Structures are given as C-alpha cells and as structure tokens.
Length: 281
Image (tube, rainbow, N blue to C red; front, top):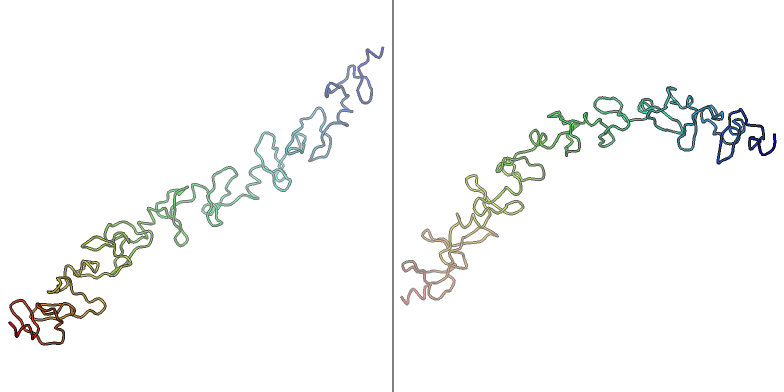
C-alpha cells in the first residue's frame, strides 16, 4: 500500500483501517492515543474518561457518568439538582440535612430554592412565619415582635395597643396620657379652639381640656379697666371691689388715671375716682 493510500494514527502511526478512531481538529487518532493525549481524568476514580464514556463536567472538573454521585449518600447526580460544598458534590437532600437552616416553628429543614423568612438570626418557612393571633402567614408584610411572638400590625393594635379616647383608633407611636386616659398627640386638642395641647400648658374644667387662652377667655374674671381676662399666670395681682375686678395696673382714677392701688378712692356710679378728683366732683 502506498503512502498516499495509508490511513494511520497521527501519533503512533498504527493503521486505522478497520479500527475505531477519533477525529480532533481534522486529525485522526487511534482511541488509545486519543485517551492518552486528550482524555480528562475522572475527579472521583482518577481514571481517564475514555472515548466510550460520557464526560460530565462541573467547574473544570470531570467525571465518568457512573462516578458522578453524591459524596454523602452515593446516589447518582446525573440530570438531578445538586449543590457543591467544600469541593464535594451533594444531592439536595444531603446538602439540606447538613447545611440548610432549620425552621424555628416546625423544626424541619428549609430546602434550597424555597422561600425563607429570616429575623434576628432565626429562620422560617414562608408559611410557618405566622402572626401569633390570627395565625395567617406574615410574609413580607410589616409585623411587630412582642415577648417571644410576632404579630401582624392589625392584630397587635387589637390586642396590645391603647385606643385613643378621641378617635378610638390604636395608638402605635407616642401618644399622650392625661387623667389615666390615652390620646394620639394630634387628637389631644383644646375643646375651644381645637389646637393641639401636647407639650403646652393647659387646664381642665368639668372634664374638658382647654388651652390657657381659651380657658381665660371663657372662665376668667374680666378686668373692668381693659376688659381682658385676669389670669393667675406669674402670680398676677388684681383688685376686687363690689364684685368688680381690675388688674393692679388698671386700677386707676377714671379722670386723671393715677393709680389707686393702696390709696383711698371714691365711687361715682360706675367710675372710681382718686380723692382729689372726688372732692372736685
């Protein structure tokens, strides 16, 4: 047979006529040379992965099909979900048992790929993280921890929150307490002008709360001189005569306006006069 008619292995030059061979980049090799030169070694058994075997690979590592199995239970991982841990391949069951979180409620493993709820180092299945009152899954909704339990906001308000005396709704943040009754800050208002009383001086009368301005306008004695309320703020002094009242600074002679505090005076109808003006009259 002439050289032009020969069909040999590119590496060992043995004839390939009538024998199995492998073509790589348009070059033919006998199976023995191909496996020696190009086959990957199995990560499990360390033997070459021959031409007659499937080469399964994961992250630059290779396995025979029969060697591609869970490092813990030895079950085949071919066409199955698996996980890698510390350079080992594990089926999902073994991985979950060894490394996955346990649900705080049911104590069962939270399988990889399933939705998991976490809070302060604890984990739950999504359906196990429930409100302690209504037993509905909380999911991604807002919740409030209380003692060792967790409550959705509506249940927490019903069971634990104070109810505002004015609007009857739950007080969840802040609030004001007066005479052992709770209010929202925005609901604790002057009965007269409806302005908020929280953080301001106020007083009450017959179980109603008033800002000082409204209380004085409604209930305080009125000065005969200036007609403004006579208040007790800052120890204010006033003069009282025949059921009439004056601020000390307003108690003056009707004619000459001299102060009558500590002095004798005369009356003329509704007028009060100093001694001098009284004599002239």
